[in-house]
Image 1 (tube, rainbow, N blue to C red):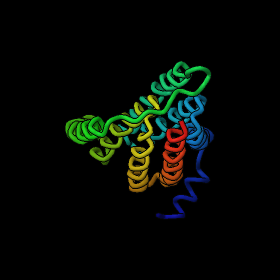
Image 2 (image 1 turned 135 degrees about the horizontal axis):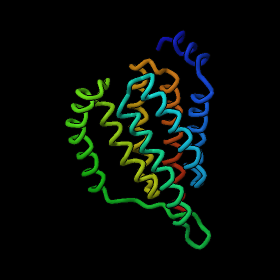
Image 3 (image 1 turned 180 degrees about the vertical axis):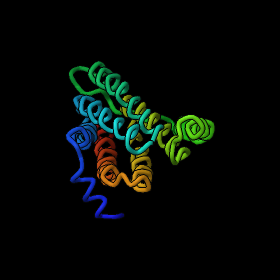
Length: 199
């Protein structure tokens, strides 16, 4: 990593970018503690990151992913609030392994034709990796909305891949953010597993 570029990016961040970074961290931390308000912070963060992905880094699939996150933020907020039972938080669930295997296989296969379209019509960079991360993130977000415990394992892998994607795009500050997200995702998995064991 070119630390001079990272330092320059930190100094060069505008207000919208800092809002995106800080609200993104708040979103993930609050999600580990099962707070419905996490979705509000997630929506704000996604608006800011979408702006950068479309405008500066030409990560088209990632930009569309952020737009998806905005819509899912509203759905997640509604689902977590309406899913409460007897004044308690919506319960954490775990899906059968076969559903995860099918979902992962579909993401890997569907990424090929979508990435070709993004290269041809949107001049996307790193299209297959970008698209694969996008599809995996859509699935992980659906699992998070449903409060499926293994969503955190997906995020650990996806955030690790995003560290690399942002790094090669020289979006070093976002790469650092993904390092933080990876650590929080690990913490989230432990928290939710503990909650399941306690209930």
